[in-house]
Length: 416
Image (cartoon, helix red, strand yellow):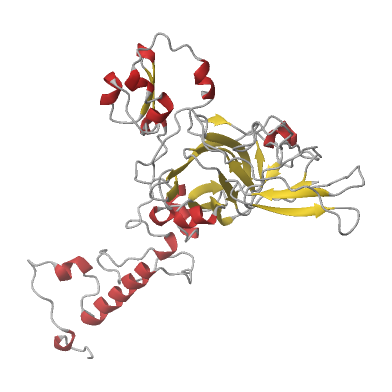
């Protein structure tokens, strides 16, 4: 038995919610001499596909009807385990006809404003009594990693780990549904080290504008990739701040889900993050290169929920890496001031030295950026214009307070 291509221990279930890009092996062992219907149902219950498993051709089984469309609840809104709010004692809370018309869950989504003091709130919140426990649905202070952009419609106030729960609409189906905590690896994982560091990545979106991103930044707005060192052990927590599930996929690596199985944690390359929930996994970045990290709901990926993961050798120096990841690996990196060692020249001002004369060092790399080529071209142009004054710094040419240097045709011995 395999999950995402790696062996796992068999689990007896009646239903599996398969996220986009996930793969599972399924063994069916019919016990009766009759036909069975295998149903594939869309997550929004808008349609289904059916197949028949039968011992003989021509047999058919009963096809179930479409189930009721699932509705998002408080947990899907990132309110944690507050779905049982109806059982709480609200007798101490002031109530009126207007308050009853605007229940807390509707007020939290901004669909209405309760009467009284709550009507003056700037952001949609949930209020429990006069004690003041309020949960804003867009409190950016609860997610300092997230950039405040129009892509962020909500921030989950109390996201919880939902790897032990079935997917949306599968809580009360009356049979066994596979959950991530059921999965265990057959063999001990190759790397069981404790994480060197940890990081949180928020899955953000604006469902009205159909904008999706990581940490509030779409791929088109990303300035630098997510940096890792080779063989680094990192614990990553994904926080879903939206009311939709997202199948998050990492190219080039497998990661171990943190579900309480220790050295036998299941290894996967795609994980479904339930709405308002979190998923934590450990990853060993053992593949050097630039890898895509994205939501495998392709509409979301194309809308911006994608990033680049850069894995670089730990001993690699910045000047040996022409990729953008060096900007993130070196916090002091400044593109306009940074000059690799093999391109260090004496063209800017040391008297008595020829501009462009290279200091001892390794030969220049054949990879030259556009900016470097422009600098070399400008240096050659300066030499052609002022062959008699090779040590003059280039800033002297453009200084308005100094006389204009003679043209090349006016310099004795120069050639046009």
